[in-house]
Length: 425
Image 1 (tube, helix red, strand yellow):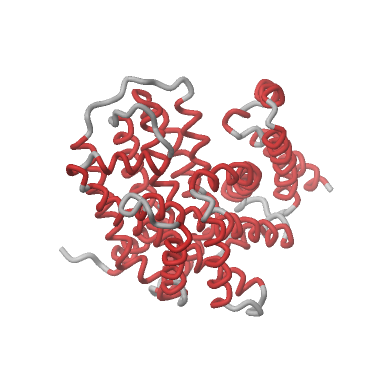
Image 2 (cartoon, one colour):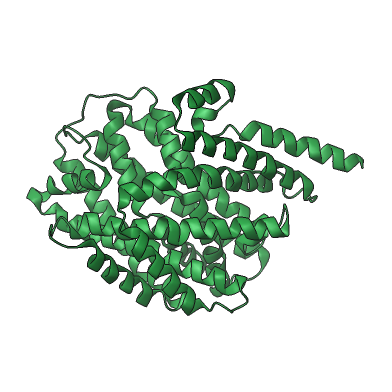
């Protein structure tokens, strides 16, 4: 039976958003966490799914019900604050962390295993030259990802997981004490909440371009597409976690090397070629989408003083330089930045989703953001000081600190106090 136009649009857009969100961290972290958790892999998977699947889904909905662009989300608190937050998110999810990590990931998992003598500079220049070429037209970039690259990524990912599970030697017997909380916190490192805030714009724009311009049909298509992408995430995360838990190795040997070792144990060593294709697809889809989104943002922000083409060139050049550091180093320095930015973004997403339809005053949203920012500064200070005494003290003092959610209760209390105070005035 033929699929009607609306369902076809939902299918294509859902797969496209999945491909955009499914980047280096999404492929590297789940099998590694599954291996470390061992018998407790499902607990770790459950925690990871909250921050890696459901939180990004909420972020897409928050943008959808705020307007058509992610700066509309920030305007609920304050227009200036909204633009500042949007700029910080774009820089983090773009040339500072996510895009360089995709390049480093492709080099370490697709190039080095086939050519151990390959120098990262030239491999990265070649990869980002491809990203630049494929991202030079905003509209064409999204079409290429949605129609061709996303289905290919889903196919190769399914084959890789299936063959890996078939070739696994049985589960390892280790267990993890804090499997759920570890998975929950590692979900931050996918960057998907920040990515979802940006990619929501692409999803909304895609729905409009397909003819769904009235409010009801636009929201229906975006809502169902985001659900489809979340379901795909849950399925493939589950497969990768299980694959890691069934892998027998003496140690995890680093994120990229661990994935390479799994591939080398598949198809009598030929699995590395499958991983190469998968890594290139994963890296390209995410890097192309992010580069296009970053360039589009600065094009709008500067009122075309920095054009789209200039933004693409700037983004890829910075990414080449930072990607030389490698996946491990990028992930390490990203942790501190994300620990600061993530809570602020999540506060805005949650308050807008829960109260946005009924509370129009900006003061409660701004109050919640200010409180969360204060807690983010405290966490950043504890991370920089690298004092275990400080960390233990905060863990014992602040509720939900071990989940990096110590800001949640105070920000919501501040939201409601400021709401009742302003309403009386």
